[in-house]
Amino acid sequence: MMVTFSALTGYLLSGSIPNLSFVSLFAGLFLLSSGASVLNQVQECRYDALMKRTQNRPLPAGEISELNASLLSLVLISGGAMLLRMNGTVPMLLGLLNIVFYNLIYTPLKSRSWLAIIPGAVVGGVPPLIGWTSAGFYLFHPHAVFLFIFVFLWQVPHFWLLMIKYGKEYEKAGFSSISRMFTELQIKRIVFFWGLITSLFLLLFPFFGFVLQPVLLGILILTNLFFVWQFHRYLFQEKAPGTIRKAFILINSYALVIFILLTINALIS
Image (cartoon, rainbow, N blue to C red; front, side, top):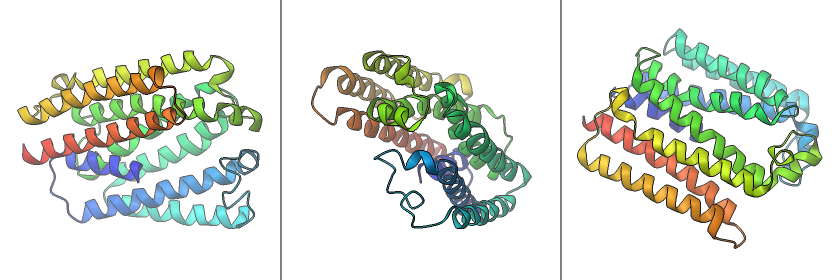
């Protein structure tokens, strides 16, 4: 749903009034990302069976066979691609390219290098571009590039927070984990740095042609200040159990608020 919402943000950011292409974008991307997720679970079934967090998923739990899951994935991806094709060739090709990055590059690379997060972050940045082009606009428009970079930057701390919480599980299952390279405190510093960079990047919006309404600009600044303060607090000051989970919820909520702010600004401008 978060992937789909980021794509809808890309569509609305263009200022376009939702029509049939908006519906086909929502349905197409939801099916496509669902198919990619199913395929990912087929690819990682043996790893999932070794981790407490994932051992009850349908495949390792034996609720569905790998063959049936693979066929389901094919149906979902094909259906999603056909729906995106209704919005043009570019949205469809971007969607299929994302499948290549996610399932053929990022997923196999996860067991070999902790740097897999880089192509993984690219995968996260593409859905807003699918939304933007579904509205009929040029792929490399500054507004679309701005949203792509924001989501790309946001993906890194989003993923590495999971590594703080589940890094040892990932290692035991055979994945390459950043926790092999750095201590927990060092990972927290890296995560906070990326979060700070993400927050500061948003303030570069004028260089990408954005004109924010005064009230929304004030909300953006306050949101950034609150996010950085709370993020630092959860990572370094609070010692109670569950603070990493709170930080994870915070950074996801932060992205959602930014999507909403940008969408409102586009609709009222």
